[in-house]
Amino acid sequence: MDMLKRPRRLRGGELMRRMARETRVDKASLIYPMFVQEGTNSVDEIPSMPGQYRWTVDRMAEKLNSLADAGVSNVMLFGIPDKKDEIGSGAYAEDGIVQKALREAKKEVPNLFYIADVCMCEYTSHGHCGVLCDHDVDNDPTLDLLAKTALSQVQAGADMVAPSDMMDGRVLAIRNILDANGYKETPIMSYAVKYASAFYGPFREAADSAPSFGDRKTYQMDYHNVREAVKEALLDMEEGADIIMVKPCMSFLDVVTKVHQETNVPIAGYSVSGEYAMVKAAAERGWIDEDRIVCEMAVSAFRAGCSIYETYYAEELARYITEGRIG
Ligand code: PBG
Image (cartoon, rainbow, N blue to C red; front, side, top):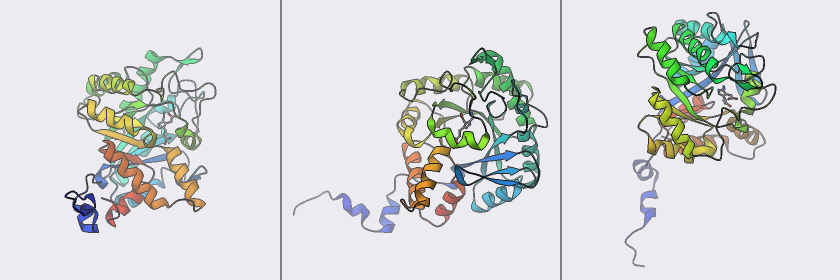
């Protein structure tokens, strides 16, 4: 048969396929989200996230070292405080859980890059991402608290801050306070495009941060929208955001592509707790091949336009890259 164009030629063998690949994955792009808790000598598995744990500060170096050994160099810390209050004061306390963890991590495992999630929901008694006015989060007074939180995290050693609260104007508030305190070079990775999503369910169990009433729809985005993602991303860039995050990831790859096309900053995708839990649950039943699914999910994020990928599977992915299974 006469046929000049045969796409199968490029798929003929492993070496040909690897050479012609359009998407490459690099360990340097991976971020591992990690939960730290008060107390001593405890490593508690999160029931809806098998294989993920809450670490006390004195034990967390074990995980940090094993990440470093696997080649994962970026860690995002989430804190689980002992006490919560109306105004989330644990978020910006000098001896808050994340602040303590950062100081210890920088001392014990200094060769990693530490990112602090900036939000109030783990620290407020009502579980919302800011201070309340009646039954809604009061935007402007929350900005001061978020800025204080970011500053205290950077003072404790955070290499980058990542606001995930979705208040309007928080990137500017954080940029201003960091600059005023001599941290002009500390980058901000904004969760600019964060949807109100059922995919955060297991995280809220892990961080004990489910809202005690209502939901987060007055601040997180409506998942029917994609043009609004561009609006949020551009606004945050004007306010000084250095990296734009899209979250969740797997169901939002169209959003990643759109934001990638419309901006000129690195795009991070966060494969969230619900994505992890779904893969784990199906894998435990033997219904899917976990390793291969994890590789496909990661590559699809990069193919869509991410240059940074945050995932609870970061350590496994780094190993798959070393083994040449993806990359
Ligand atoms: C804090 C925050 C959340 C996540 C990251 N930062 C939870 C939420 O907004 O309810 C979710 C991460 C995950 O599900 O893995 N606001």
